[in-house]
Amino acid sequence: MPTAIAGPARDHPRARRRHWTTRLVGVAAATALVLSGCGSSSDQGADGGVTTLRYQGWGNQVTLPELAEHLGFFDENVIELEWVGNTISGPQDIQSAATGQTDFGGAFGGAVAKLVGSGAQIKAVINYYGGDDIDYGAYYVPEDSPIRTARDLIGRKIAVNTLGGQNEADIFNYLRAEGLSVDEIKRVELVTLPPVNQEDALRRGQVDVAGLSGQFKQRADAAGGLRTLWDQHSQYGPFNGGPYVFRNDFIARHPEAVRAFVDGVGKAIQWARLTPRDEVVRVQTAIIDARKRPNETSETLKYWLSPGVPSYYGFITDADFERWSEWLLSTGGAEEVPPPSELYTNEFNDNATTAVQPADAVAPAVER
Image (cartoon, rainbow, N blue to C red; front, top):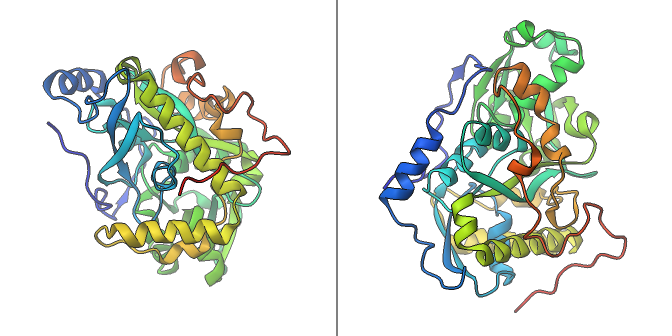
């Protein structure tokens, strides 16, 4: 049985010429091979439930499912999560889920649409990241950089966590909006680096621009010496960036486990959004310090601001995928974008009947 990627060193920190037309190959065939060749650790429950859900984490960060488990937000249909390693790439994470190496994975909406369009039998069930009014990604240059406009990026290097991820789509959307042609955009070079290393690479002059988000963005802001070229808030406003997905066959076999997962993650979103920031940081720090994963630190958690999911309990809408359609079609990432009905469902999100956050919303109670 294939093993999941274990650790953030999957992508060597070297420059790569961007390939806007890179496609995921053989996912449907790989899915059939893996699912027929090995059993899942999650196939242990009864009546649609499971005992464990296998997943990949992110170094130096607490994911929403990890937070939900710690706070006791999963019911008896999800007894525990099984960490199989870390990833630095949403596209890789959902491909691992599609091929049966993990039970769920998360990536930005464009990567989900691209993978489904290539034949993968997966479906999004809840949003888990994005940008709200206080926490969103931005693209930085050094204060003294000569780069001032989109056209100045031609021939320059931009650090991204992976090819085919939201950074790539953001860059394309920004450059197109500023009037660059597709051919001119191809002359911008993407350099794949783990998020934790991008700020340092920018300050050392190894790249010209770095796309930073979350605690890595806040850390860079606190250190100073960098200038924002553009940010996601000015680009999109509040937006849902990406969802968690499960394989369709997993959903069919274990609907109550999926419901328990969505319920727990949705409650974790609301808890992190509505609980005082210092308490959220304290809890996340305790989680990282207690699990003692290799080469991991809780140091950057002090910069945490928000879960960054603007929709109520992670509710998904068509717009969460339509935002990335031009990038997919213009760059050859997809010949056509699958219809929303093939990409996501809110049927397991019992707490969210609307994408809008009610004014009287309160954080879920925590089981102690």
